[in-house]
Length: 401
Ligand SMILES: Cc1ncc(COP(=O)(O)O)c(C=O)c1O
Image (cartoon, rainbow, N blue to C red):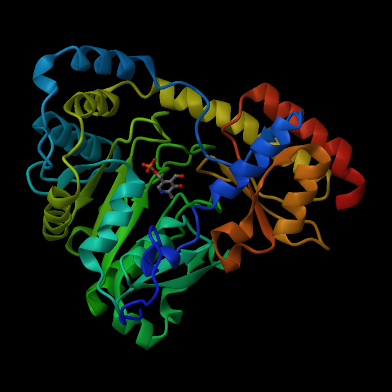
């Protein structure tokens, strides 16, 4: 990154760091949808992964009680309330068989997005690199750029089950790498972790002194009997890595901004040090509601997963009927599918938008290796999914085959 002072700068001119990062990708898609809706088009958005169902009632009730208690109204501590940290430790023990010390190995995060971004500031200097999956969640590339460092892309290889080939990372990149981002079940591909990937990541991290950051945004959203593991259950993982666990998707809590970072105590301590300078912690009522979510019944999660599985099957069948060959994902709220031949990601998304008034995300939005794919989110009510499926069949059967 250039360090010379800029000449002729304008008021409100963004920093070079900010200019290096494109506007968050969904902003443009939202603009297009709003434009069409204003013109009277009945758009169905299967773009963004934001659960359409409400947060489970026991969590809302815990929040209502906590919010009515004035002792929760003051500044929280960045370390988090004991109830929150202990609830995470108990949940990790029971759900994943992972032991976490609630005093030193877990602290709250205001959503996984914030956490990933701030980890970049805690661990990357200019000249350093973060290893980011391609395609991948955009903060793995935007975060390093904003921190003045580089994101080095690791193509996810479909023949490896959408894993990166960690042994193919060039030595000079490994030399600069300080962070390795992984995410399984995976956005956008819907892949679950391939055998041996977490183990190889631990080895590599040990060999090269790289901190592994596993983004566990989707472990509770799985299908067909698949149970997703925690990265921290991998032998040696806590020595080399952290996991970010978000309640956003699995508990229908995207608006609440509730997550935690768990694992390596030294890394968590650095993250905490950064956070004490950046924000003032998580609303204590939210911490208590988050604890209630983790300790609560699993029935609502299973019911949600049954809803997503039904939508997934509807979509997969419709896509197959219009000539798109797609495998049903075992996890996440996304179907990742190849575009029909003759199309790019962008041209197919455009066709679907114009012809069927259905929004899908072009795979290229998630990185160069996403080209040739598109992503559909399952977070739209059943009747709208059914309508979208009807439109896809009607409008695209001829053009796509
Ligand atoms: C892989 C991944 N990580 C993190 C997030 C954001 O999670 P949160 O709502 O906790 O910030 C998302 C949301 O789409 C995601 O797909």
